[in-house]
Image (cartoon, rainbow, N blue to C red; front, side, top):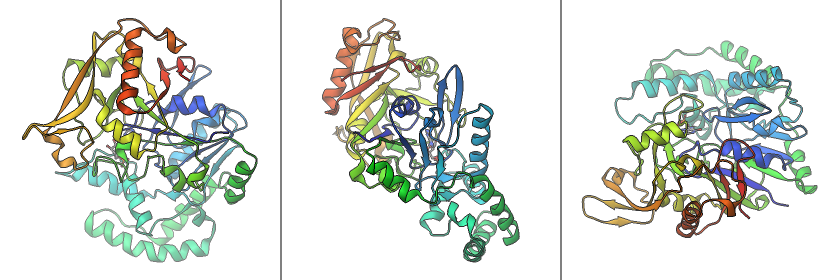
Amino acid sequence: MTNKVVIGAQWGDEGKAKITDLLAQNADLIIRYQGGCNAGHTVVADGKTFKFHLIPSGILYKGKTCLIGNGTVVLPEYFEQEVKGLKEENIDLSGLKVSPLATITMPWHTEVDGYSEDNASKGKIGTTKKGIGPTYTDKMGRIALKIGDLYSKEALSEKLDVILPLKNKQLEKVYNLKTYTKEDVMELCKKYAEIFRPYVCFDWQELLRSFKREGKKILFEGAQGVMLDIDFGTYPFVTSSNPVGGGASTGSGYGPTVIDEVIGVAKAYVTRVGEGPFVTELTDSVGDSIREIGHEFGVTTGRPRRCGWFDAVTMKYACLVGGLTSIALTKIDVFDSFDEIKVCTAYKDRRNGKVYTDYPTDVYIHKYLEPVYETHAGWSEDITGIKKYEDLPINARKYLERLEEILEIPISIVSVGPDREQTIFKN
Ligand code: IMP
């Protein structure tokens, strides 16, 4: 039995949805453990396109239990909308569960996020404006509401007596935003309680225990990517949660001993949305080609993604801090028409010539860094129909094997197109 965590190994958007979708087929319990509706996962099933933000895409398979874990932040209206969309498609939601310990994104969180982004003259993060940072800030500040709070009027009232005076002061004095009365918020919470009621899993402890006891397969679904991790990413240009493999423990209710494998999903190149350092970014026609061929536009915001060559420096780092046991390399077919493909193996500081093969965590110096590349010959062949690793062109295999050598970790899955069938399981 292997319990797997699937995480993004770059800056998000690596194609995790396809890999989790594939692995979910053989899982019994799928847990989304961090982030919120900042994530956007597109899954094509039976000719229909589904866009997920919060609910694990495993819900599309009958009979699976899908838990939105305690480590997530949930915007009730988004959850409601996602549920409605799935119901309209007659998707069975009997396996959908939400942890009572998940944190609620309140209207003031999205308002503060929007305000901070729109009014930042310096230090703009380029967030998705879904209230993620402000919600996690309040969670850590111990002034957030958990979904479980919605079902005790007395506890909710007591909590709001602590939260609201503080919050209103902040909203008014710091952000010049509207304030909230207790009556308004109690009313809102009544509405939220109804949205979550059919799905709140108050007996989550026994649920998790029973899956473990019965040796059922558990899949932990990460969002965003290692380089956006609050502890290890390109801080402060990060999200406010822990997309690393370790986040699966704190965000699900299962300790680390339950996890057998961590699969890091990485694209054969790199993309990033929002601000922040990106040493291998290509602002030329090569970058444009990658964006066009790879359809690199955000699911949640529609923003064009910044594109660049594969960065083995950040990837080596992601293998370490993400706890990866193998890599799923996606979108390698985007290079089918490329004569040559580059891989960044080191950074060079243009001020003093210093070479870094380990990721420099002081991101302030990244503006002085330039990529050191090795160049690989392309394969100039359509590989989108290939099913077996041995049938890949020799140059594609050489490229993959060189990545394994640099990263000191196996590539277990190679994705050569968006469909489920366009996947090569290497071992
Ligand atoms: P936030 O998570 O909305 O606070 O945004 C913080 C940073 O993470 C921004 O650079 C976003 O563009 C980025 N980000 C958040 N979610 C995703 C995602 O699902 N894919 C890629 N980038 C993301």
